Amino acid sequence: MNQTRKAMTYRVALLGMMTALAEVLMMLEIPLPLMPGFLKYDFSDIPALFAGFAIAPWAGIVVEFLKNLIHMPFTNTQYIGEVANFISGSVFVFVGAFVYSKKRDKNGVILSLVLGTIALTIATSFVNYFFSLPLYESVMGFPTVAVIGMCDKANVLCTIDSKLDVILMTFVPFNLFKGISISIATFLAYIPLHQFLAKKEEK
Image (tube, rainbow, N blue to C red; front, side, top):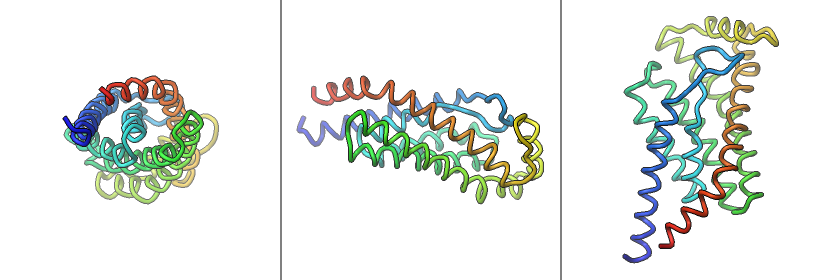
């Protein structure tokens, strides 16, 4: 098998494996304390980050797209949640993988994950403010005032009484926690996994 075909086979196999793992992790979403019930946490961005690091930024976006496409039959958000998840996850993965592609060492992993977490938090703020919340209200009949009430009830640290408060006091902390926790898990797992995958690719 020539090197080009071998590399293509490796990439397709890795993308398939990471997509399957991402979908499994997406199905295992859990609620978090001090967060409203409609916000669920999962680790499904980790396989997308692995793909982006191991292959290229575009590979992480492919995993984000495929996991959300596969997840659509199981959704109760009329695909709004999946589109929002794809946008925010792709920003996280692309920024992280792009930075890592320029500095492929442990410091590069740390920098990529820090910048990816910042990008994720900013992206989700805009996506939720301008896309998700308006569509939940217009398409699903889930009014923003109800979201505000749920966020205010869940948050015991401060009062939430506007859509901007929802973004700043609920979505920003949620996505910072998500980005940081996923970054820690990725950092701990990626180095040994990358070494294993690199050996497999060489064979």
